[in-house]
Length: 179
Image (cartoon, rainbow, N blue to C red; front, side, top):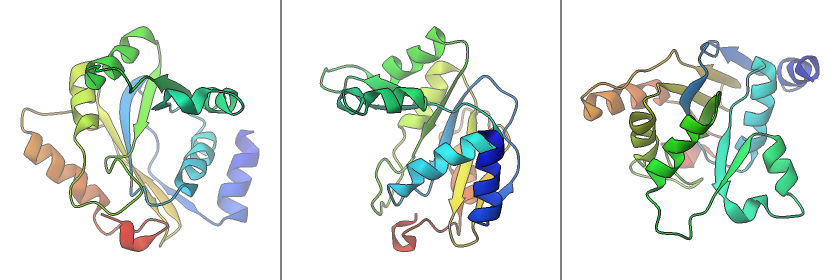
């Protein structure tokens, strides 16, 4: 599957990969810009290209039949959002339950244009005591860019400046929705 993914990604689609995925068992992976449903499938393909498991969370209803098996197979974990749970603590606890867990999230929280990122990914990484890896889906230049490990500091504003600088100028599938 790895060879087939590389063939499709590099030869058929003509995309490039900038950087390599860090050797880490647990991290939060922020992927941006998230502008189209196609991003999910690009992410699944890139995971196979880099030959690394990256997980995601989704609302519990996504994991019901008939497609629930597929979402679990590609690394999904269901979350019950109907309860008044502290989602940061709930998601961070998954890191403690698993030997290897790399959680992919979109900092925008939606596929539409946003003025500000949501902060949940940051607090999840802080609570779980794991680093962040940034992944940019640059449709304009047909490349996926992967950062080195980013360790949280005691200065959230400076951390966010660094994150946003990494994604500066990156155009998603729908460019006008890019941050």
